[in-house]
Amino acid sequence: MRNIFGWTSLCFTAGLVGGFANSLALWMAGQYGWTAALGVNVAPSWTLAWLYPRLVWGGIWGLLFLPRWMADSVFWRGVLASLGPTLVQLLVVFPRQLDKGMWGRDLGEWTPVVVLVVNAVWGLAATLWLSLADDTPRGYSRLR
Image (cartoon, rainbow, N blue to C red; front, side):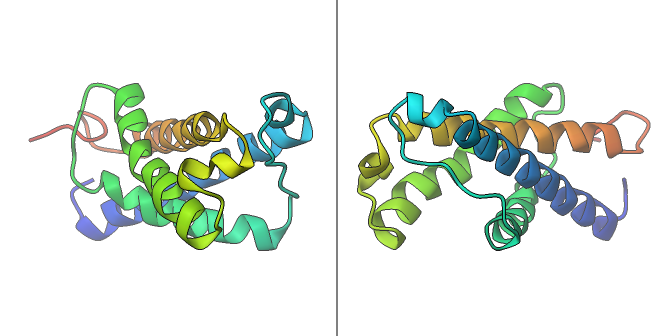
């Protein structure tokens, strides 16, 4: 994709797709009792009020993919990009906005691991979407 507006739109959409995958993974973990089994008090309800901000923020975080980096690894690109939202969630949102303690540990000792895993789902889904949707001959994120 050589058009910057098209590429920006694709990155935002990839982040949105990642946000949906992240939300689905977290919701399923709560519904099937996986988070409770880890002692983590996170079991969201699947509502538009819960889902909508997660999709928008997923799209905004998808703009991390605007610079074309790590061209040869969908896995590592997704995992490394997911560290941004993970750190913001653990170091800003949980302690300062939700008053759940540093790293969200008031929700359970394994909360940082749960956040790391579901955000990795975001990153992997987003990079997979980019790799499938990019129409350039050499594929997503190839430096030219």
